[in-house]
Length: 484
Image 1 (tube, rainbow, N blue to C red):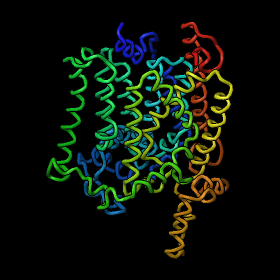
Image 2 (cartoon, rainbow, N blue to C red):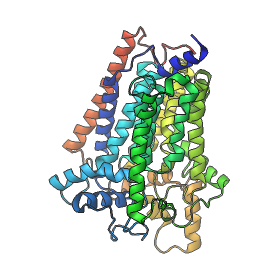
Image 3 (cartoon, rainbow, N blue to C red):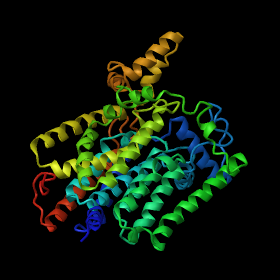
Image 4 (cartoon, one colour):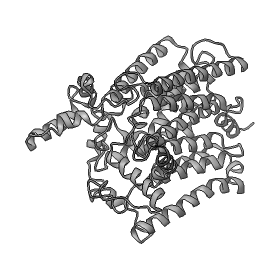
């Protein structure tokens, strides 16, 4: 077998056949967990605009935004955002109008579904990369519970849809030789573009990994090209039609509207510093567990340099792209939400660390510590409305312009006054308490959802253990079946 074909075998994970049971259970567990922590309404400006667009599509048959919702005067009558989130909200909006008109409880379950699906897709990705079954499940559960995912599940932003698209694209790449591989890869890229058109630059390049990882006779075929092209052409046609509908021209994308006339006006080093080093928006401050991905990137590079290089490039390009954006921080929020899709890649790198080094005591201890830190950050982010501290500390009435500017600086750059510390200080006075199923005590829906989440996670782990035993592994620690 040639070296090129050996690399193909490594990417495709031909020695391990992925099974859907564990991934489905992971998705079910996380979706139930997200239901348990719901606020029941969308607070953000972006999410409110996209939800209103979905409502008008369902109720009026128009793709317009009501001026009353567009409090900033920037997104009406036509929103500049990608259409994906509003389309994903369409069916929940129909159900909302049937069962609870005027509310948002069902509409707000859109992102929980997208995030749970993304975690479910990570399981077969791990298996295709040759990971231990238990590692695949642990990584997927960690992605869904120890990152920005739980907070994003309570909002209406578009990043969860992009993350799902990226995960599907990666699954298609690593399982390219299967019949559905090219179609899965193309669909993933198309989904990401539908949710955020900038994914043409930030997600689509993942397809470069295919010719770099597989022999020409495996990717330059009619069926492979068709599988990739069909969903991409369909989304491109929809996007061009939508641009013509909104702006009267297929050459007008709405970029200037979304950029509020500023575009990419943040100095790059300043933006990178904010997204990497600042306590208020630094990526690893809000997802410490993904530090495990740093050694994993090196380990995966040794096995699959082409795939690892492309994934690393996707992370780097996303980081630079939003570092120079006029709002690198993504507005008032919890952590660097604009970087969230990169969490998919970092989770894959972290999985490689656990799979290759997970039997080492130091790695296990570090993993537990980092997971505990991440869980604490997630809990603080959910227990207090993410906008409360900003309004209390930065946007408080009566402040002078100079005082507000100083507090805004401290919110992003001070360990004492960043959002994590601020939410900790407000734990006993969250107003309103955001977890509606636990406001005033444990409710039946909240207890049921939490129970299903725990049971689903336990069942996923049990299935993974059975798969490990069937494949000849032992029941030791995560990664114990793999050498270093």
